[in-house]
Amino acid sequence: MAQEQSAHQGLRRLASGGSLTHQLLYDADCGFCRWTVVQILAWDNRGRRGLEPVAIQSPRGQELLAPIAPADRLKTAHVVAPDGSIRSGGDAVSVVSGVLPGAAPFGLIAKLLPWLVRGGYGLVARNRITISKAVPKARKARADAELARRSAPGTTA
Image (cartoon, rainbow, N blue to C red; front, side, top):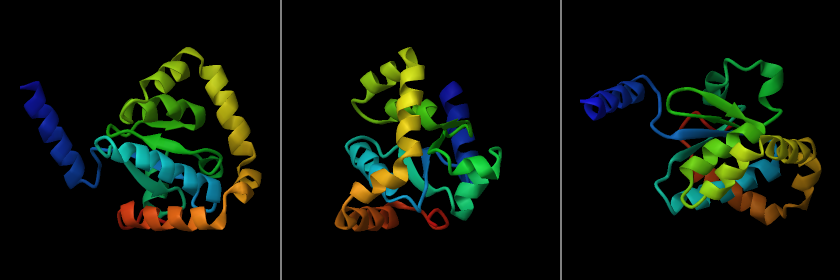
C-alpha cells in the first residue's frame, strides 16, 4: 500500500512538472562549475542517473530556487530533492553522495564533519572564477556539450 501510494505521488509529481530525480543546480557562467557538474554526472551514469543538471540562470532553475533570495542563488550550487527540499553549498554534499553509487563515504564525512565540508566548499566557491581559469577551454567545451545533451528543455541558461 505504501509503495503504491508513493508511486502515485511520484506520478502526480511528474505530471505537475516535478521530478523523481535530484536536480543539481549550477552556475552556468562558471566554467569550473560546469566542468564539475559533468564530472558528477559521469559518476552518476555508472549508477541510476539520479541527478538532473539545471542551470541556476535558466527559467527552471529560477523556479526551483524561488524560496531562496535572488541575490543568494548564484553564491553556491544547490540540490533540489524529489520532495522539493533544497540543500545548498556544502550541505548539498551529503545529498549528492546519497545519490551517487559508491559515494557513501563522502556522505558520512559530510554528516560527521559538516563544518569542514562547508568550509572547504566555501573556499572553492569564493575562488571559483580563479579556479575556472585553470580548467582548459577544451574541457569546458566538452562539459558544455555534455550538459546540452543531458539537460531537459528550459534547464540551460
